[in-house]
Amino acid sequence: MTIARAHTNIALIKYWGKKDPTLIIPYANSLSLTLDQFYTTTEVTFADEAAHQDEFILNGQRLAPKATTRLAAFLELIRQRARVQRYFKVKSENHVPTAAGLASSASGFAALALAASTTAGLQLSSRDLSRLARRGSGSACRSIFGGFVEWHKGYDDQTSYAEPLQADQHVAMDIGMLALIISDQPKQISSRKEMANTVATSPFYDAFIQACEQDMIILKQAITQNDFVTLGQIAESNAMKMHATTMGAQPPFSYFLPETIQAIQAVQRVRREGLDCYYTMDAGPNVKVIGRASELETLQVRLTELLPNTPMVAARPGPGAMLLSD
Ligand code: 2P0
Image 1 (cartoon, rainbow, N blue to C red):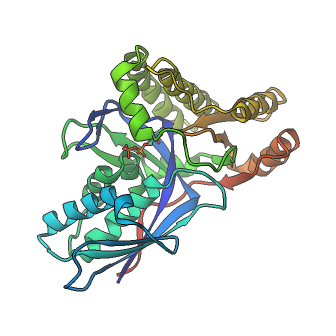
Image 2: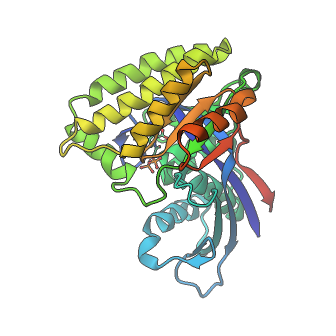
């Protein structure tokens, strides 16, 4: 039995849009921070010889076959590479604090890539594991690594993978995040669907991709120079540019809820009061606040005064995917 664990990651430069939807090759490089508080633990074994499909148990619940198409296609890819015929039994637990409503496809596919490829007898380098995880979900390729991670868009299956920034660079930064739980409801439109529609219809999309290139240069410089303020400013700006693309799409769409705006205004207010903090958002209404790890508790106390009904979870940089047992 193989057990693997992978942590989720939050992008500071967002991945939004696929050049190749089959191979999941993005239009731009992205850069994320892997977090310690949210992770998936996945156990994989071979099913009995007689089994005629893969079996998935998520958080103790067996998934219906129609909910497993994407997972089964991913395992099929591993079977082909390893030249094995046997189906798999997969048991997965998402350790995301109750009602967090945070995306789990990144940690989920990263943990599954490691556990299933190990079970199948593939001994992949971290880079090849990252390439494999990418085929399950784009952001999963970044969860193979800890700390600050860049996904190089590349141009084909071989050249599109994630890579950690130098370990000494990420240890130097005093950084953490507060996840503000605005809503725990399933998202209205999946990121996969909305990013495809944005690429196809939004006149702002090209401008976003160009901005990502510039933002990436400045952000990487900020990490190297341990410049927290510039990092926060760029992350905030990049996230809002991503969300602007969906408003320009046809039909226009936004992941914002009224409470999202209130949370953003609270972050802006705390910043005016003198505590450095910045917001970012992914394909949902929740707000992640980037703060200094050493000031995270103070930040949480002040934001809780301003947003008393919003649960918050504090997280710090987390590790890459790991085997717990093989
Ligand atoms: C990111 N997001 O960089 C961006 C920002 C959401 C907003 O990666 O279709 O679940 O499986 O490749 O990885 C969410 O997209 O999409 C995502 P697929 P994924 O974190």
